[in-house]
Length: 174
Image (cartoon, rainbow, N blue to C red; front, side, top):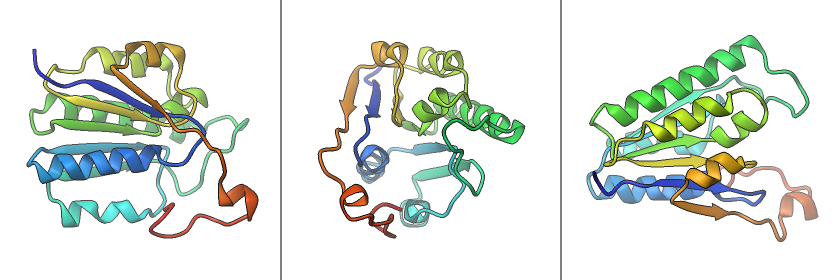
């Protein structure tokens, strides 16, 4: 069996990816291999330097340079990238190299129709018992939440983006 579990970080508040990154640093500091697939992200984010500082951490992005806007139909490239991210997540779980595997923004990918929910459910079902699997993103579906061993919902009470119109800041939000 093993001690791995399935965690979900969801909700409309800030901190879902940050929670995964903090968990990744903790795992790397204990010598555990970490793999993070970033669904729908292709932009430059500060966390992309983690593998240089922590060789135990691997981060791969599977998205374009622009965000997919809600209500827009995903492009064929968006769909292809999401499937590639899911495949990479599955391969990482079964490689024997990673004790922690993260699927960053997978819940948003499912919500926006970029990835079929069934693909995400299959990933959960194929998790080896020794692997800690983490899904992040707003809009986690009921089926995903039912399968989770741990769910944390980030709840926005107040955010300077809304109160001050402040954009994402390097090193804090991106």
